[in-house]
Length: 263
Picture 1 (cartoon, helix red, strand yellow):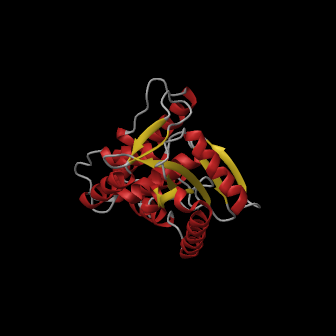
Picture 2 (cartoon, one colour; picture 1 turned 90 degrees about the vertical axis):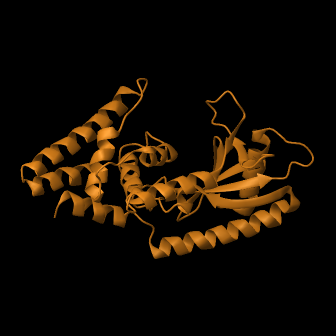
Picture 3 (cartoon, helix red, strand yellow; picture 1 turned 60 degrees about the horizontal axis):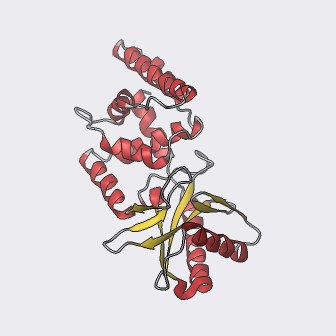
């Protein structure tokens, strides 16, 4: 094998199985019906968003934290409430409709943990000129932040189309590395970073993978132990490239396999 065949095979294995997709689809149908039954006119729409709609979600065998983002848009005709009010309503809903499941708030979402998947229930309100507002992270000084799930989906799709369909597999690889190294970067930030790169002279999965790590950066205030993990990965990739250039294909592959072990 080679680095290219290894990364290509691994990225192909980092997709949901038919059985997982079927179970998730059934759970979404159930969740949708229960939301309608419980809230009635109090909710104007609800839908899944995030990596599960982009084909970049990882199976739970690759990432135990893998989840489905699900947005619930509340009716505010009687006045907009504070984010915590809507979070409390979602938590109460989950406790009533999923009494045997693990339920907890992980600001700014309500986590509903089922046997085969976790849902992150995200309360939202519509914005006048399009898009939505969702609760800001607890570290933020503002209560709400704007979001437009569809626009980011379009960004990922366009980047993937313009790069020989290599972007989504690349996203899965970097998210897998993040998962086995402690989830120090958010899923969204990694996908956004991958899409923002200019992959000059890249054609194979290996080319994209090498260039991504060459360009991977962290901020000055990143914790040192996270910097060490990133630097270790970058050094491994550099060693693989060096060995490959000298004809040591098997050694190059073994280095990448140690960095990103098969499932």
